Image 1 (cartoon, rainbow, N blue to C red):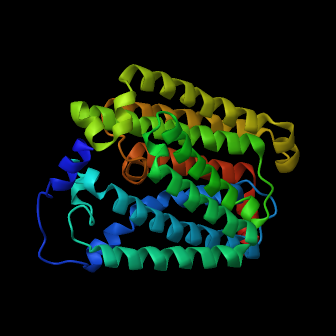
Image 2: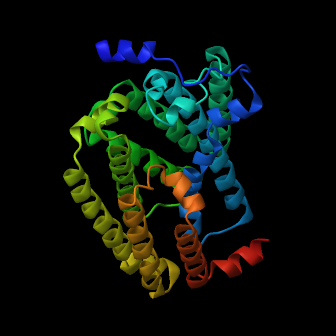
Length: 315
């Protein structure tokens, strides 16, 4: 309680004269984080039943997830605004720095949430249900699960699983169990990587900003990173070799995409140990090595599964 009172009393580093500017509101909804919603397109990449209607449904599903996830970010920033003021960089967030008023943030939250849910309902009832579960999961995370060691990262990984389900089950694409498990392992890997970077960046003050960091240690996080990194490579490799995958795509050549995945995992581990992996979304859009390997992986998968012919036929 004393710690929370201290945080509430702490003032932001600056007090902007202008409030609720377009720039501040745009920062509030975190469009940079929308790159996470690219997981919605995973199912589309690996389906053979590609058509214009399905592509449109997946795009609408991704937009719906972007809107709902932005609403969740507004909710999280509202709850965490006192803790964020104690963080060296998050203190500049719109609510923590008082550049956006609480009433304006509330209006943005309602607008984005309702817009996303309506779009999700337009896609399918299942898609709308996934979005509702995503909001409920994040509410539980914000209200207390984020303070439980290990559970905090598992809840974040569950959010990525919902993105994959949104782009598969939500639009009528049967999801692969191995692909779902691989996506879950990727999310765990990135989540523990983020915790590792936060612990290194904040050092002795880590628990003051994020209490759960007091229960993590560098040794534990390194072990968890090793386990999840191996899990990603193992599950993706098994997916490429699975008899159902071979029967669906009529090729065994998908296994040769595994080196791209291995390099991406190793590159991310390298950046973690350099202290540059605090925000996975920023890395994927700024690190040239990760950008290149993701693009090469996508191109190889498209070429191997002959989806380029299907795309040209649809267009």
